[in-house]
View 1 (cartoon, rainbow, N blue to C red):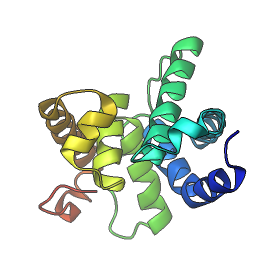
View 2 (cartoon, one colour):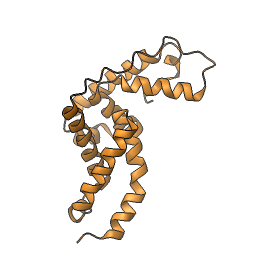
View 3 (cartoon, rainbow, N blue to C red):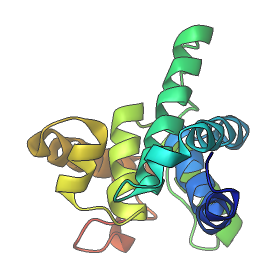
View 4 (spheres, rainbow, N blue to C red):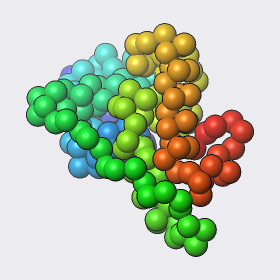
Amino acid sequence: MPDPAAFDDFYLATRELTLRQLTAMTADRELAADVVQEAYERAWRRWRRVSTLEQPQAWVRTVAWRVAVSHYRRTAVARRLLPRVAEGATAGQSASDERLDVEHALRALAPERRRALVLHDLCGLTVAEVAAETGVAEGTVKSRLSRARAQIAEALQPGYAADVPDGGRI
């Protein structure tokens, strides 16, 4: 039987971050909450094995992502994402408006590009770690990151273009 206390500690320590990551990856907080719950349920059922992994949170995040992808396939949602952010963010924009602009720009990314960008730039994974987690070559990850950043910069121009640091991280 799995150790309930160890799982509880793991869950409490990782749930909020995992939820934020999946919210960014799916661009849908409700879906993210559902898939994260499903992933932790699966982790609990397999806790004896999952607890021995080097990075059990990465396992949960991967399961949650796969559940989200399955959801999209099952419902055959053609996610024609929100129209481009209106050209030219104004200098007097509030922080919440800026956040909405960034969320809209993230939603406009293809899911695989958004996932790579979130894992690398928001979660802090290396290119190699993103490649391992997503099951693609490092070159593919680099390409997805480059294209995602270019698309984000274009969507947020001209008001944000100067704000993107040289490293390209958002």
